[in-house]
Length: 333
View 1 (cartoon, rainbow, N blue to C red):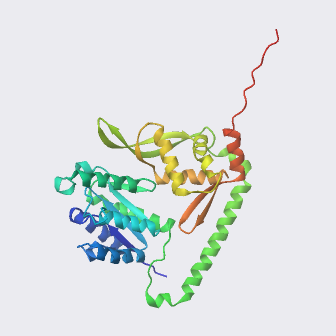
View 2 (view 1 turned 90 degrees about the vertical axis):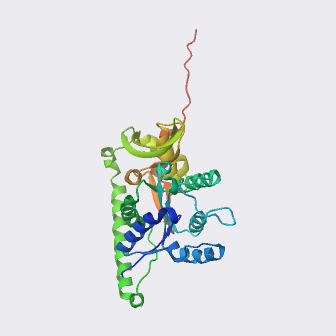
């Protein structure tokens, strides 16, 4: 069944016309249905109620942040931030594209009002904390970021989507998809069992004090200016499992684990930083390695993924994290 996904594009308007145009063109080329303030450029409280209904009907929410905070509502927040907060509250999956160096933007594209600047900074911090964010510096980069991020998001977090009316009434294709999914699930279960039965071969896997390079990005203050830094940090597999171990003794959300690992890797180089995040592919590499080592089990509830330690992982954590009593030998005189 041919599905099309509706993507709500949210941003300030006047300063990001080119950026929005590039993104919307890319979405249409990807057979998606873009929706946003082009439908209602003059915002007010009454129209915002209509906007919420459009967000409810959307499968994904794509946020673009530049150097302006935008028009402020009677509630003291910009309509862009209100749209973002509403999408989060409704569980709509967010793709955030944030300008990496807003201080380099031209004057007409940045906030001159100190109060608006402060609100923008707080909004940026809210968006870049606890979620995967892509940074951009030129409008021409956005189509590529959308083309890379959206398919990965659709694959990881499948949404309902829209179908043609004549296809929706034909259940044959739907039953075929369900059968294919059932077969795929059966194959995955067999694969997991095979992996678990090969514990004796775990010695061939990277683990323990073996090091793994992880790409990390964070913001630090140098010379009185905030700068975006990125580098590859080597950490050991033991340090990674120790970092998240206490949190996964009970089931924990995957986005929390991502934040904990990001902050830990960034702290290996900087004592003070903000908005840290490791590369998503490296995060997936860690996830697969812990699954193969049978240290962590992964479950999904709705659109939320969870991490939980396995019995084997718990045994290993107790072995490497327990504090042993020191025995002082005293010589009799």
